[in-house]
Length: 215
Image 1: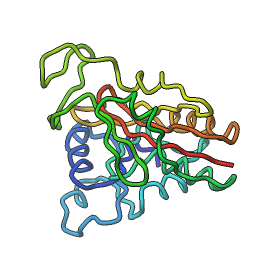
Image 2: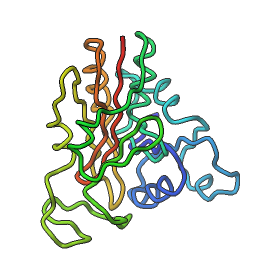
Image 3: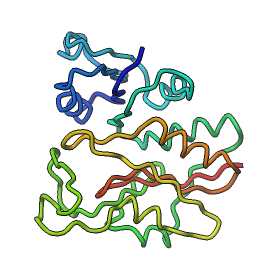
């Protein structure tokens, strides 16, 4: 079945995403491991799959298969990176390494998370969850927006490391996602040859980065 959106995860941000894009009455699939039987989403006409996000993508993301227009990551992991990681494991040995400090120092307001993740953001405040991500100004400060974060990360160069950025695009206020084709383009870049890859997902203001090395 052809869906317009796959929402991966149905916690706080998954439910927000459904509310803000559901008004369009597009075909929506939600992937989550824990949606209660009495949750209103079960009677809303939305399709539900009980599965882990990255594993679901591994099994169902086929370039010649029925794919959604957009995937909305709403799980507390770097979904795109984990999907790439699972795909690479079919080809060879892969490790998640610490991002070198020389790269971290190039990022605005970096924070280290689990699994050697680096979170980066132009904001030093809690952004409103309904930000429309205008191209020219920050809706919180009213000031000119800094350079797009996905462009900053794309411009990072380091010896022996290639940079791959999956851009998250605004689908509704506070809701971002990416096209399946963008994931396949990123995967094919990584699979083109073994080595070290900086894998990032980023929008204009926020991003998450991992460093993968595969042999």
